[in-house]
Every structure is written in C-alpha cells, then in structure tokens.
Image 1 (cartoon, rainbow, N blue to C red):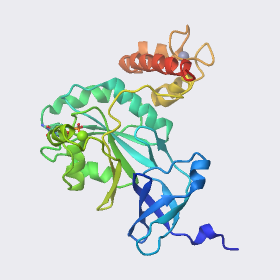
Image 2 (cartoon, rainbow, N blue to C red):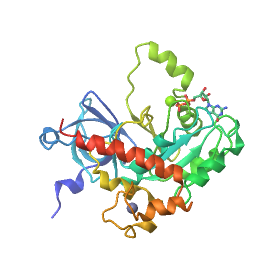
Image 3 (tube, rainbow, N blue to C red):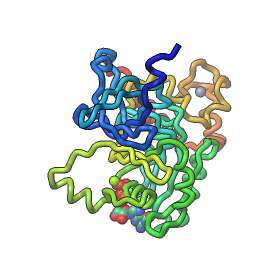
Length: 299
Ligand SMILES: Nc1nc2c(ncn2[C@@H]2O[C@H](COP(=O)(O)OP(=O)(O)O)[C@@H](O)[C@H]2O)c(=O)[nH]1
Ligand SMILES: [Mg+2]
Ligand SMILES: [Zn+2]
C-alpha cells in the first residue's frame, strides 16, 4: 500500500513570513506554501529548519504544507528546528559574559545540539584561549580561535559547519554577523549597518536559513540575550553540565542540586579543582534563576 505521504515532495523551511512558508524542495526549487488548518488545531507551528512534506501549488498559486517531519531539536528564541551545531561566540571585547555562554551550552546539551566555542577577534588577543580552556575542561566542547578580520581559523570553522544546520549565538558585538558574512561570502548585517537600520524602518528581521556552498546557517539576531530558561524543572539543570556526570550518584543526598548540600561530590570536586569553581558558581546563579522561573511559571 502506498500512503499519500510517501509520494509528497519533501522540503526544508527556510523562512516564514506572514503565514507563508518558503521551502527549499529536494529538487532545489524554492516554493511558497501556506500551512493547512490542521496545524493550528494541533497547536503545531511550522518552524524554520523544519523538514516537511508538501503539495506544490499550481501555476502562481501557493502550495500547501501537509506534514512536519519529526524534529531533532527545537530552540525557542528564536524559534527554529533541527539545529545540529550551535557556534557560541566570545571575543576579547566585549568582555565575555560566561553566564550567557553557560546558559547557551546547557540549552544546547538539553536539545542534543552540538556546541562549539568560537573565540573570535583572536587578532586582538591571541592569549585568550587559556581561560576558556581551563573553565570548560571535562566537556565535550571543541574550542576554536578565529578572526573574522584576518581570516585565521575560518577554514576550520567552515569545516565544522558542514554538518547539518548551524547557528551563531553569543552576546552582541562579538562578531557573529561578520563571521556569518565571511563564511557564507554574503554581505549581511554587521554592527555598523544594523545600527543604521535600527533607526530606519527595517527593525524587525526574520530568521532565515541560508543555504549556500554546502552550508546551512541561520541568519538570526537572536540567541544573544540572557533570558530566563522557562519550563525547565530545576533538578534537571545539572544534567546539562557534562563535567558533573562522573560525580552523579556519589552525593550524600539524592537527588542533589549540587548547591549547598552537605556531602555533595560535585562541590567537593570543585574544591579540589577537578571542576572549575567559576563554572560551579555560575551554575548556582543559573539554578536560582531557573528555580525562580519555575516557581512563577503559572503566574
Ligand atoms: N578586530 C576584530 N574585529 C572584529 C572581528 N570580527 C568582528 N569584528 C568587529 O566587531 C564589531 C561587531 O561585529 P558584529 O558582526 O556586528 O557582531 P555581532 O553583534 O555579534 O553580530 C564590528 O565592528 C566588527 O567589525 C575580528 O575578528 N577582529
Ligand atoms: Mg549581528
Ligand atoms: Zn551534589
């Protein structure tokens, strides 16, 4: 038996604007679709990055988005599906906000997304590697020094980006747009330009998936602010700190938040320098934020 689903063409949502979805079909053509009413009933929102089945339109008419295929990952702000790699960017200036880095890493681990730490502007301070390398040892986290200005490390970065959908994340001013522009060879919104634009009328930007030269990269201004992590059960936060894993189950209390509990193996490991005390301290800050958001979730 052949199901209708098996004969529908497949595609990838690259953009969604005003209820219309732009799809790159497997045949390499871009088509414009509208979502069927059933998605609203199911409270399912098609996202950029979604793999879908669709019915092509006839002539000038838009087609129909019929089915969203199962997602590998979902990020909320901005809403995107199926990101495989998140490139968390820091730079000597502005000074790194490691709390934001830790939050982005934890969110990536929670979704099974592979994070990579990108140290940009290495032309300004080539010594910068040491601090993050110490802080993030014990994590499966590639660390890459690059300079969007001199081009150093960009080949390696592009290589890492070849697998699946990628996005840049990190605080404003670290060079995400410049890197994206250099890597894709496109002229996109760097600091100077977007400042100009923000005074004009093009203040809102849509998330778009750029597909070019074997790369799939999200062009998004998001993933840059430290916002509370909503709807995460506080006890789960520790699970997204891979360096805690060897000590799980060794604490006196179970479950243990690794906060102030006596006989906590993670706190002990930090005292012995086996876990970065700074990472642990920031984990406590995030834990308190997550606990607060959790308490207030129905308000
Ligand atoms: N020295 C140096 N400056 C850079 C580098 N990459 C970006 N910048 C500058 O950093 C500023 C912010 O870059 P932008 O791409 O807008 O950052 P974003 O806010 O993360 O998207 C701009 O003035 C860039 O020219 C780099 O590798 N070295
Ligand atoms: Mg930018
Ligand atoms: Zn503990």
